[in-house]
Picture 1 (cartoon, rainbow, N blue to C red):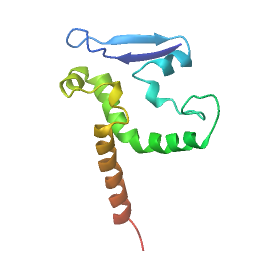
Picture 2 (cartoon, rainbow, N blue to C red; picture 1 turned 180 degrees about the vertical axis):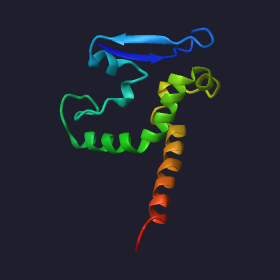
Picture 3 (spheres, one colour; picture 1 turned 90 degrees about the vertical axis):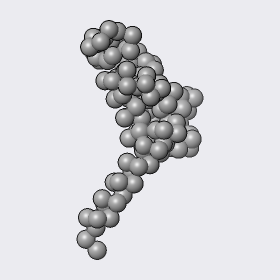
Picture 4 (cartoon, helix red, strand yellow; picture 1 turned 30 degrees about the horizontal axis):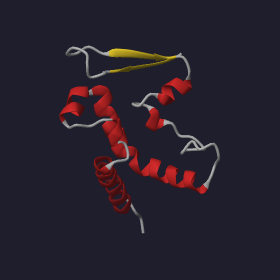
Length: 116
């Protein structure tokens, strides 16, 4: 059994909801956690193709922004509601902006520590 604790947004202040899944497929099908399923067949069309490789690149690029949105949805559901974030924002414009800033910071830190 996989156990995950998250706020659903509908509970009273400070109350958390425990979600239980009997298997990994149920966990992966949940809209909140579906984004975090890294698969060989990323577009789930039943066959591994070159478009799956592009999906891996997209998965990696959007990870910082999607991670922040996930944390907002999971830990601060009222903040996510205020910012109008939902699971449909995974891979969207705001996630892309957050990811771009995060990867830019990583890039410039890498340049700062470059020995040559």
